[in-house]
Length: 545
Image: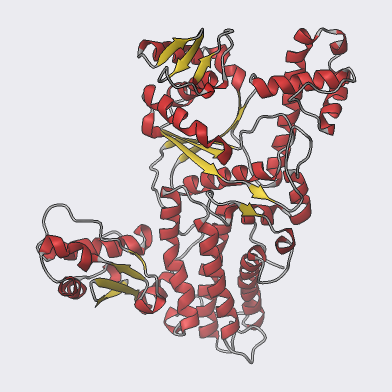
């Protein structure tokens, strides 16, 4: 029998539930019994509406079914007990099992081989390299990075990629803007006007001798690639400040040099997915006049969509990834159906996953790279620090807009979720120091049977939930579940720290060395888990604050 620790307590309860259903005589497919965390703590830790779900199948009263299930269920290792409540079955984690769990938690607890080595690419943060990253871009960067951390933690072989646009309308405007500044002119309409464009022009004048003497059609491609490379260097330095790295910075021009867009277009022509109309080449229904469906313009110039077709071949065929996850800002939502349709037409359908995230707001006003008015990600890190940036970005589901509270992010108090979580970890580290000072020689083995108080077992209960959180966050690609969990664990830790012997300066550390050793075991288990969770968020776990 697989241990509860390796499989997660929810899986063990679910296995026991399904076995009990079979014992009641249910054959064939079992409906979804909706086993999940109990919504009301007084009802237990997990609950299922099994009685209601099986009533139609078994043609019995839901209350009778639930009662029979509760009597029949036996969870592995005695991890939980069951009781019926109407048509529901509630499960409560057993105190003895929670105590045993404390002694089994080690660094990296919660890691599970869900991926089995699946080769997977996550492409994220790939904004046009035409200016510094602003705070809206930072959300996609940290979201993508935490998705990668989760996937790596659960047995996936992950490659992190930044797709560098180098030959599209915006980058050509960028090159034209640098050319204009090089000659003291205003950028063209729709160009880039920030001070950094003037700086790039002066750098190019120094680094590219004779560039100012060339006509625009010759100078612009050189200036464009020069400026893009300089911006990539800056973007690389910026993301490093928020603890993000990429395995590859993949330039768009590599696609055309390798012939991948041309090959994709050839295949889609052959399969009837491309239509010619008004001299242009369109993807899909020829009656659909959306401009974004154009692959080759009437003047013979390819669109960004043509590059993206080649990029699909690059990932799924040339580099043979099993799955690709792309993280985009929500303003690209209209492009999702086209990319999904293109992936389906090329035979990659379900292997392409696209995650959209909403914008980030500050009170400083609008952010526009082109006009040079924006709050950069570097500015934000300077003001609140990398940990606060990452934590606040991950606090909300990607489909909700973030109102970044600068004042809260630098507050050293329990109302600041970053401080609250990190202080919990620091307190757990402090417990170990205090225990060593008061008890130079503690028992080698911990008697976890001494952990009897609710405020002790509540910490252990949170530890039991952690593998489930990891599994759900990974399966749904939702790293915002991690800070939710961190807050719950930190709350239990703070209560544990304060609830012990009020006569002692360090309330977890007491005169009794046996009890101190048991509580120290619980502290270590919580510290390991809290650090793992913060690592998955890319947030530091300080030992002192």
